[in-house]
Length: 449
Image: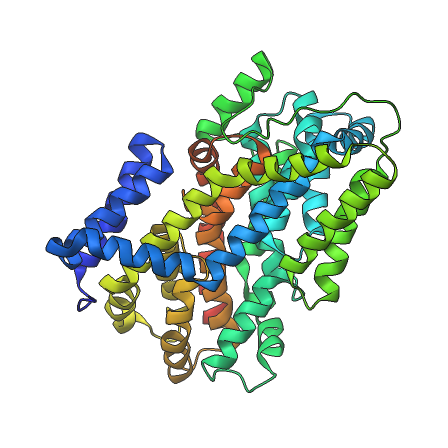
């Protein structure tokens, strides 16, 4: 059962965040938040409600899509690593990189190129660049920061991406944009999406040391410099076949190009893209006899199994979001801040409020389907530019994806880069907060102009 929105709806999010910080175990933290929410909803039926919500989540098209795409991305990465293609690509880049800073800049540049989907970006770039950055004793936490700070932000800013398609659809469904004009309105808002702009532009400054390592990142970098980089939680532990010298850089690039090309060809359908990329990779390696057919199918299954821990976190995060929705968390917070939404303050209030909701719930898309039909009419009545209001909302969404300890993007960036989820989240958070402060100040200035 759903409840009337009240301050009580904040408790599960508080439980989840505090438990995550103390335990550094995202699944247990999310389950603690879920349990707290279920007890608030209907204590006597907590178990039955959990079972019902779990079934609803597992039948949801979005979570099925995530499981298919991420599982097959694991298969693709497993194939690339098993045959040594990822190694060949890494050797090529390593020969060009001459320092830790240049290795991280190559990571950043590669992330800018894979702009179709943040899941694809986080997994592909992290796994491709691990050995390059390892060579220069860059911590896996720093690699994960660069990957995560590029993945969602670049997908937000390039209108040919799954993010653009999703938000354009929400704008049309909410009747904020005319039918067929959602993407046009989205594009007009790109200059005002300050958080993703700042997050992306900060990466080369951090990579080259112009912005120093902060907090726990400083410790991680020092450990890597002294002891080398150790494999972290979520490492793709795939045994490579013996390198016969036949595996070249194109054995890595062709599957990635197939992934991008088929995704674009099929109207940004990443699911078809990854299915075709796996098929192309198996055909390429099989016809060239780089691997036995049976070994390749074993690698496909191995890759899916490796993604199970990350997918578990994502599924539990969806359950947590559903519980928060039933408690009315997004509506409560929006209703509480509505009186402060003057023309000058609205973009900043929207950014801070929705960023906190996205951070607390781990939902960078779901809560915005609720918020957009409420917030944007308020912005219009207050005389705020619609592109500016949308820019503030999507900036908040990008922050939630980037900063939340258990968001799907955080989990997959850690998975692809080979470090623990909480290690990545806690080392990254100072940079996310710096970007948020700059973005908030910028939105305030733009609203006053």
